[in-house]
Length: 361
Ligand code: NAD
Image 1 (cartoon, helix red, strand yellow):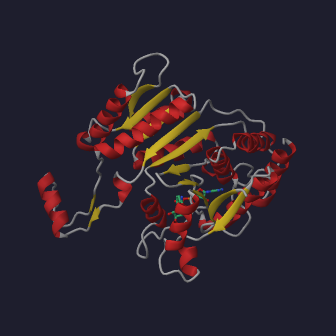
Image 2: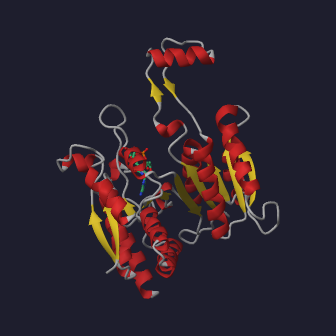
Image 3: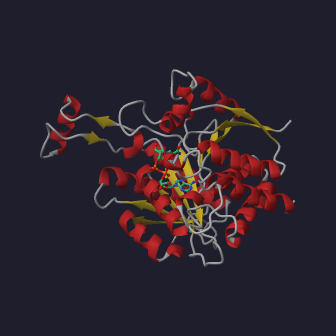
């Protein structure tokens, strides 16, 4: 009996890129049984009363492992982000976005190989919001000395020492286990002392408490202001190794790094909590491209490789990753975002990766 994994195909291009990832996993003979569940609009379309159905959450807790396509969030009205709902239900507290540039179609690649570690659950993305004119908004704005207290909306940014500590411990442990040498805390503590200042202080404390702290064998911790980090990522991509940050900066930095490395369609991701890990690409559901066999499947295929490694199958993970690198380098079977002139579809790109991965076994 193989590993049991929850599969969430998602919305928009989600079902196409998940089918592509399954094709590649089959090609390397990954021993996985799937429990297919739904989230977001596709759950509601199937008659679920919640965008985060209890059955999906229960399956994720039971299997402890989820491969997930992107899910759409309505921009206004409707339900709140199903991703946030799932994250809360599963207690996912940290997200990993590795971005490695490889040569595409005979070109050269910038020297970029960074891993963005994002704390999740706090920061401006937590959804702690106060409506304009509400008593809580007026009170908060008055206490902070804002100019227009009666008509301004408020999104709260908060970091707690316990949550930051857990993320920093994860980042330093992960860096050490994966042969990384430096973790850079990205912040704007010069302006946001109560939040980013706390984030930086706690990260430094955690690093100082580690056995071997300060020795050359350990992982070094330094820091960078977020605006400078963005500029450096573009101008000197080799400057960074692991970036440790909150949810908002982590989102911006990982998309920026992905763009420098060749495009948002290429970047994988993983999120971890005490009971489950969720593997999904960094990109969204790209509704414009849905159902057209156009989307780049590489982000989710690389996420599937991260999943294999999580399940203890490093050998098959490496075969998938090498097959992706080879197909990107060859340049014959690339989707529209990488080969504007002569693109292939999602399915063909996945087949090319699957053929390579199968022949390397
Ligand atoms: P997006 O990532 O879907 O699209 C941004 C741009 O990148 C678009 O031009 C799109 O065409 C392109 N793109 C994205 N993925 C691609 C791929 N695999 N291949 C080729 N091109 C690709 O971001 P968005 O437009 O801001 O969001 C669309 C929806 O996705 C929203 O509802 C958003 O809430 C949701 N979203 C979901 C997740 C998730 O489920 N993890 C993450 C981000 C956004």
